Each structure stands twice: as structure tokens, then as C-alpha cells.
Length: 129
Image 1: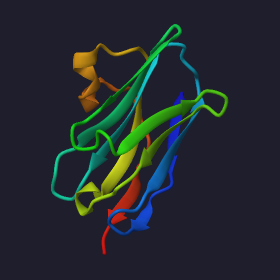
Image 2: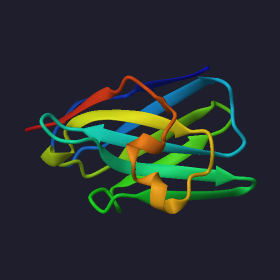
Image 3: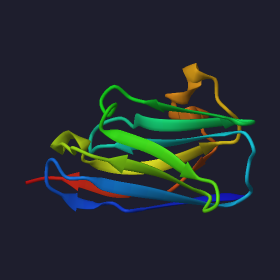
């Protein structure tokens, strides 16, 4: 069984930066897709960023709303995935969850939460002045 645990959320002012972490435990996979999704109150869950790995190849993908401001990365030694968030805006306020698919998803499936096998509980990010 795989367990994902997020940390790093908090309350910040607009323009600030924050780094979220997701620690994975349990089984490990040589091919995988790790992603961050977010859900704001009253809104549907939204794709944020993903990292796909297969063999020696790794690729990253971002939603248009965070491209250029967020950076997803992976530390294999720590079995963790991160998202560095900069230039935060009030509209970034949401519960952020990490998700794992135990395969390298084809690109057209990366954006959709139903294609992921494991989820963390989420961490709240609030951007407010």
C-alpha cells in the first residue's frame, strides 16, 4: 500500500512564495506519474502540475494558470515530490493534494484526477492580504 502525506501549507500574502512537500511511503514504482491538484471551496478539483517518469526519462507539465510561477520537482532519495510556488495570488487559495499513478500516464490523461491511484489528505494554502 502507498501512503502520501503533504506538508508545507499555510497563510501567505499575495506575491509570496511557498513550497509544498509530499512524502511517499510503501511501494515504489520505477514508472510513475506524480501530480499536484488543488480544490478551492465551491469549485471542482483542478490539475496543477505533474512529473512523469519512465525508465530514465522524466517530464514535467503544468496548468496554464500556474505555468511560470510553480515548479514541480522530485527527490528520489527522499521519495518525495515538491511544488515550489512563487508570485502567489489570492486565486491560488485551495487545498492542495498530491496524487500518484503507478504508471507513466499518457499526456492526455495527466490532467484528470480519475487516472491517479493514490491520494494524500491535502494541505491548505491561503493567499490573503
